[in-house]
Image (cartoon, rainbow, N blue to C red; front, side, top):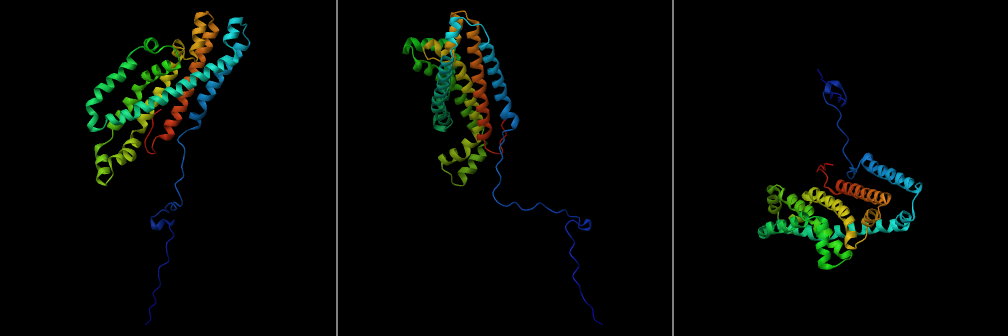
Length: 279
């Protein structure tokens, strides 16, 4: 008697008798990069600022201005003050980063920890002093000019970046650092490839705070001869022209909100993937 053996027919993956569901197709190519910036985050603040500036412009152009108000609110003059404020903010933030970031990294090293109380006390002194008082003291010492205003703004904004850099580096799990050293990384490699990437969210939050502080402190630069939107505010106060004062205040608020919006976008994009950034 002859017997024939036949291989059983393969069961399709989607057949109910197999009890298996078809798995996802294997990923091919490089992982697609997606931005964490939502459309709402991208558009809401610029639209609000545009509406505020447009409303202010229409109000001023249809108002019955006297000669002093027309001179103070001349388009070219206002643009000059805005540009001076932007330059002061950018330059002071640059010097804050140059000073505070290396100092924050250095003070978290074991050999420099004894200097932490002195450095933090010095940074606290700059911010604990009222900004106008600090500028007045610097004016007596250094004279009137943009350099005096810049030094005062830097001294006032160092603390957030310094403290956040130190806090971000100290918050890293020591086991991660031990693992990095265990695979043969040098101290510089551990700092560059492990510590700084993990501390980036806190560091960027400190930079964002420093930017806002510099925009606000920049309005006081007018008292030290540094220019900026503070000239409009002081002109409105000294000449008792409310419209000039309001325009200077609105432009300062808009610049602060714009800087904060740009900094928040940078904070989202520059933070390492996988680390949540709270807004």
